[in-house]
Amino acid sequence: MSGEHGGTDETTPGHPVGTDLATLLDDDTGHGGLTGRLEAAVASVPPAWRRRIGGGTVAGIGTVLVGVPLYHLFRHSVTVDAAVGDALPLLFGLILVAAGVWLGWMSDDDVAPLVAAFWVTVGLGITGIVTLYFLTLHAAHGHAVEAPWFLVYDVSATGAVGGLLISRYDVRSRHRHRRLSQRERQLRAVFEGTLDALVVTDDEGRYVAANPAAADLFGLPRSELVGERIADFASESEDLQAQWATFLDEGEVRGEFELVRPDGETRSVAFAATANVLPGRHLSALRDVTERVEHERELGQERARVEFLNRLLRHNVLNGMNLVLAKLDALEPALPDEHRDSLDVARHRSEEIVDLIQTARRLATDVAAEVDDRAIRVCDPLTDAVESVRQSYPDATVECDLPEDGAWVHADGMLETVFDHLLTNAAEHNDADVCIAVGVAADPEAVTVTVADDGEGMPPERLAQLFEDEEFTHTRDWGGFGLSIVHALVTEYDGDVWAEANEPSGTAVHVELPRIEPSDGA
Image (tube, rainbow, N blue to C red; front, side, top):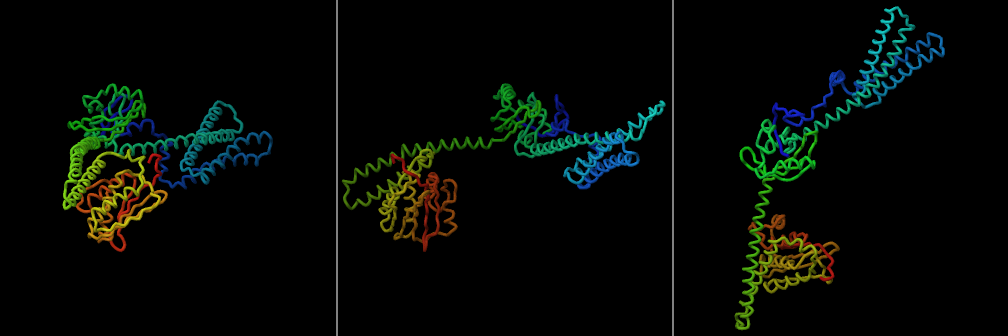
């Protein structure tokens, strides 16, 4: 179930060991003989002339065969016996004339006219010569033959029509051979040119054919690979004998195995094998998946690290911040009024840290299944986010225009984090007295929330790059970590987010979310 790449002169039972697939396909596919040489000789003749020459030859022979009985009937008295005797040769001649006209001027077959001309001529000549030979023997023995030349004519006409019938079989055989040759060339091109390793093995598990990609995979020239066995490249842990027997019984198999190259390097290979593509020959397609397997292993390690971080945030940092918030609540009654602002700032920052930890936990886990059936009224998290920003940035003006019907969207409680980051980003990166306008537009399919400010804005190229990354990123030194969180969450909700310049100044960010009907328990 693996591959090869070269050629040797070794032989195995049934088929010779070859360097490519042609060795296995060339048996019994040749089409030689006299007609084959004839086709090769006229290959340079233009197709139209081939049809004219072949069809004209057949029609010419038919015309001669028609002319002889007509001449005979014209020169002699027409009797019933004479008409009956000339009817069959006359019919044969007419058949040849019609066939010649069709082959030369009506058919689009480039092979049939010349093949028909060849066989009609051969049939005419051979039967004529044989008839003359027997007439000569009769004459040598003193036997008299009445009208010998007409006897030669009648038999030759029969031979000409017989040649026409033989040509029909020959043309079919020739077309069948051409189709087989085209398929062979196509198969050979696929076998040799495909990027996947392809190998052919015999019933003993020995490689008898391979393409160049197989030689690269196995790290051997094809001349050295051919003749080797599958077991020569398998790790010791592979139970190849049982697997090979199962494969021959079932006829096909797919899987992966460890391929040990001659230089000692181990590669992970995925394969698909089909038994008996030719009698006793089994084809396997191999693909090097070492990098994929390594990537999956590294991804598993990364997931383990993320899960560790997630637990660390949940059990240590988050619990610690909840304790801080509880202590702040306990201290509030005992603090004098002049320290209340400091307490509020500490509580607000602590709540932001808790929110950030919850967001990080959300991004560190696969929650797509949780979101599938979730619905939330967009006005609720949006109102909470607006009120939070108004308290945190009292100098900023936040105008909010919400719809009366309170459209529902495909999202969950983390949607407030999206709006909070957008509003906070607009307030932090502009003057203290910035004006922020929040609007909601709904249609039957989606709900679009727009957060627009009247600040200085940013260059168009930066606007286009704010949400262009397909995956979560935090490596850029501009645009804000919060916008990356926004992008990740909106993408999780099957939504879209984009930014554009606000008129006359500032930036507008649009969040489009799928509209959904709330469930009965929502």
